[in-house]
Image (cartoon, rainbow, N blue to C red; front, side, top):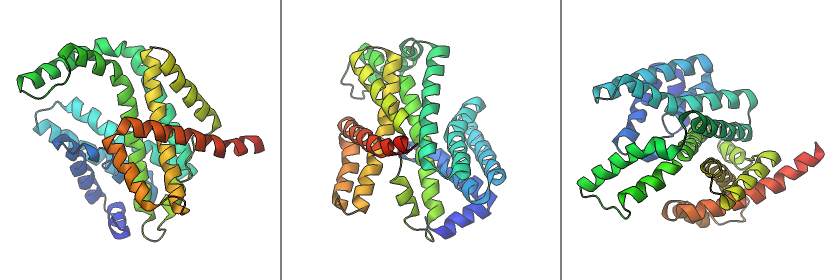
Length: 299
């Protein structure tokens, strides 16, 4: 996406609304990788033209998504929740970025928002296994009826999946919001400020306090068997993995890491995600600690 298209979206609210609505439909047709793309459009408009036009684009995109999902036989409230989940967090982070010009602060706020979301879900809706078991069981039975391959027994699958869903909701919300914000910032910087987003992304930090809390929660999740702690650990692992990825890009930019290894890293994130995320999270913790301590000491 070049600067002319970005400018066209920023200067044409109707085009931005249609683009947001159409991109928002992609995940519903199996393009799960596109979850973070729709929110990038109103975030881009916000960064380039301000909040009023961005709110107009988000509201118009929401109406299109609600109408489209209603035509697909889904209730209007479901469409509203879906649109709010896609567009709301990137828009809020975009407003924060416009005000502070700090991607690191946006990541920190996104992580803290994810923590609050996990705590609220556990406090208001209770044990995730009890809440999700009926839905997951129905889905597993439907898969079994259709002859889809299942490596685990239904009840084992239900217990394993249901127990982790609150955490995954928070992780996906944080990743969706930050992915959309990264994409919007990258679009904004092309081509007059080519490379500006890369330099900004490479300096991502969680900060000393949040980095230490992340490590403590992850260790606690390994030593205990509490669902809330496990859910928080997943969220912090994802955040530290982003820091690790930023560190890898920084080494590549300095010539200390060949570009091929960066591609290998992304392939490993797809092929062996759990191991790669854990390795990146460890790298991210060390990098965050080393770069945050001088700042803390000078303060």
